[in-house]
Image (cartoon, one colour):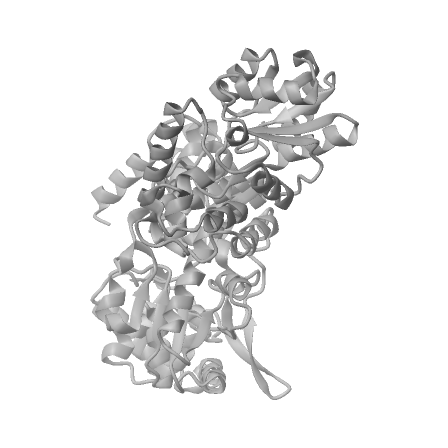
Length: 617
């Protein structure tokens, strides 16, 4: 049930009643933690609580409740909990402050409560809680609930909702009869059955929807991130929600990690590579607005003309090959990619496999030939582009001071090319990497955020073309450089492949995450890498049909322009089976292609993994 339908249905049900009373936690407000007790562990994680506080706090509450029951009380106060010897010296105000900061409004229910008040109904809050009524009121008012006619908290009366006792106290003190009141809550035992014991009709809220890749987490920090997403995702449209829940944690966690890397190198410049790191840089700016960062508009393709001017031997030869698309291309296709302006010539049918390492002799010979050609009149454009590349890089002074180069990551080819062209020893920081990175660059100068710095797993690479699309600036890739008013400026490929249906909304949701995170109780807690990427990897591995449909029609650039996952009809493939093989091979999101084609709950991830294993990739 969506936000509007929850609000509207609740208002309709509540219309005949003189008063509407609401449970507080998980009804009017939610916490940015998976379980109430996780708040204490988070206080340890971010301060001000000392190590071991969570265990001592749980033990103190258990002791206080046991003593209360022995004295005939069914509820305890926060003061009674902190009076236990195990919490000697601890300040209960720190817990109250944490509770206040962790509280966020449950918007559909809060809007319904506000509307009930606006139409003249009495509105109350009733909660089983050890926190005092003033503390509960402060939390509610922080969340925008400043219109209540009264608050009833179990610790003030020594009785709880689940026994019906607190509801009977409420009726007695307000003078209302049971039939005049509707109680709204989320717990069948305490809220629905407890209200019924006092003769009050209960309304049970539906459980919250899953948001994107979010799922139930058991660790306090992981659960807090999951709760943070669930607590806010309902305010967004579907595309915005995908950006918020699937991509927001990833760009935010990476930005926080980069901040730590920069702090470890005082005075270092932080340089984000276009286009893939555009939104990571934006997230960094949200989280750390006082820090300056730089944006380097280069690509492997744009650097190739300068590489061709170098002696095409050894490491440079391999580097030039790595900068080319890892595909099977003809000589003419390679020349056009490099920027040669040559009259069209008939192809002789020879195809060069640029995926093979070590380089085949014919590829080595071709690169040497093209390097020599770039220094002749036939290669004038390539030679000119090589000079402009060097001029552009000289203006950026990458060889001065410590430079942290931020990229989405693979084998570190762009970092290697920049180092070869500038003589700099850059510090590469990557979202993820493959095993080529450690082979070519010393580990101290090339580190990755995800997967503990080890090579990324199958599902990351299966979804990397889509991830690059989602994280990229809304412009074409840098393909060369020109001069404008005496200044060398990058030239982007014409045709804006990232401005596609839904992308603006997706980006809006993604960038809402760091803004919300910065303002939250959790802002000083690093998001673990496995939590940051879980939602996105789950999307790639096992998309739901609506997710496959939402993104499957998008186009990505991966040496060419390809559709993510847009199969034709099954009938068409039955008539033309070769088309199925071709379309599946060209699809850049295989599991979603299969999901959209068959629309059945099958283990497409297992099928794809088996195919990759059989191919030895």
